[in-house]
Image 1 (cartoon, rainbow, N blue to C red):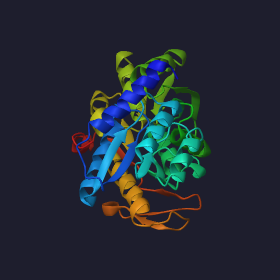
Image 2: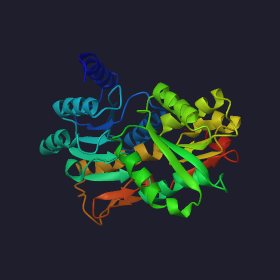
Image 3: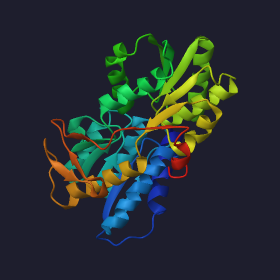
Length: 331
């Protein structure tokens, strides 16, 4: 990681901490660590975390993350939070394994660590909150494309980074059910690093390389918006359908233009809320993360943990022209 990027990450973290209002010394400090700052999905998750903090009454949320989607950036953030002696870290990881040593140090110092959205290896956290069931998400992202290709066709995947835990799992789950969708061929997988400009270039490259491409599946809220714009700019609305996982507020224009016929997502506000509640229960109420445990998540009910101390929040929900207007102003 360059000196500039290290400095930028440190400044971003300091800004996040200094920008929060003053809290009492006995407040519970929960750090919501995201893949990168400036991404709408994670900003919506922060709204949910703030809602949970207000409901709990004695919680300060430290919303922070690196300036780009790298493990190195998140490790610097984690080390800074250890130095701050926060009570809990709830992290959406950029790498399954690379964060483990830093997170183990956090736990050794008495800091509760959970992962959410994109997980870390079990030895680096106490539990993981999946936004939905991985098999359901994997099936959903290919089904969204196949539903509009009754005779089959060529599809390509535009993911975030090569090390994005959640997206790699979803694509693996998608591959397991490909046999159920006759005639659908995945011709390529590319990575936009959750950067809008790179994702746009990758989507443009896919359409140039595969002139008969029928759909781009982007299981990332950054990539799906960039791909939809690339389709519009290439004049291929009606030829290439962009689908995957996105936010209604960011995808309403793509639905209106016809660049996307449908997409899916869970509510990121609920996800941030749930992660905060889980971190609080483990750090303050003596709740233990163990297989079979049911851990309260406030208004979201309870999370039931499996043998890997993982649980799912909710099923993904499909958005299209019939309902997008009901949600585009919410998140």
